[in-house]
Image (cartoon, rainbow, N blue to C red; front, side):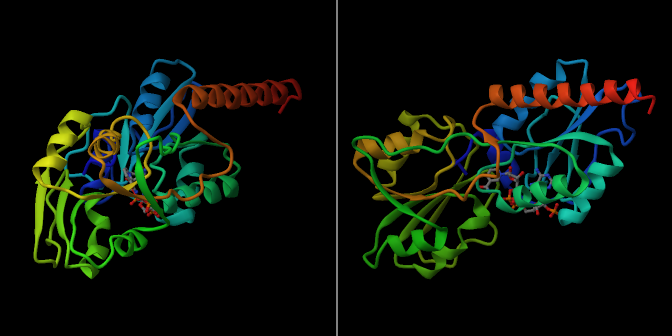
Length: 290
Ligand code: NAP
């Protein structure tokens, strides 16, 4: 679906079991091991930047939601860790020096787990979240707290609704079968929604404003439901809805983890800071003869 960049979308599509493409052995050359929790454009860009450095070795972790994940610039491990405990065990076993939570703003469980696991094993954590979109003049936004609240916000009168949500999030719309839905996702929606009128489109973003305008007009859409994911790649539908005067029901994002930065550049600075503190402690330990 198109609420996220193509990379975000690639992480949302279907489920695979855990697997590991990265080497299990830590680098024996003193490089700091960094684990990036990914599934977003930011995680891929950050990984590419860190891959250029000689002082760290990066592994990117994906949940395994997609049938064909996009290529990544660093070794990838795929699949859940098994909650806080599993992630804490992984951080300790792999001697991770720094954990970066670069997951999607709506991926709350893994972020809560990351904070708890990093705390448990004393690994520093840097979290990155792209800024949320803000309504501008001409936008017709109705902001809601959840997908269920978005269903209610559509009202009783039948409407033509574009669902710009992950395919795993659309089931609540079965509670409002009076509307006609257009659902776009990367992988097909299986099983289809139990509603009388639903059209399914499969496509991978990014989608620009002109293409989104054409799509909304073609399907005579009068309401868009979208999560406030932020970022450029999926903003086209928001701009298109504004241009066409269409209401957008915007699901507000959950709170960000503590100490979150907004950009890849800021995350790189935070990584530098953490790695500098790490090497200062190592130097001090050597000086103490430890
Ligand atoms: P979630 O609800 O926060 O996480 C559910 C479980 O999936 C976690 O408890 C964890 O399993 C596993 N998991 C999630 N992200 C992982 C990662 N990067 N590496 C390894 N395991 C991970 O997450 P979600 O909303 O299902 O999102 C899954 C992935 O899709 C995330 O990586 C996210 O960045 C990406 N994504 C999400 C959205 C969205 O709207 N939610 C949109 C675009 C992309 P264990 O507890 O077993 O460790």
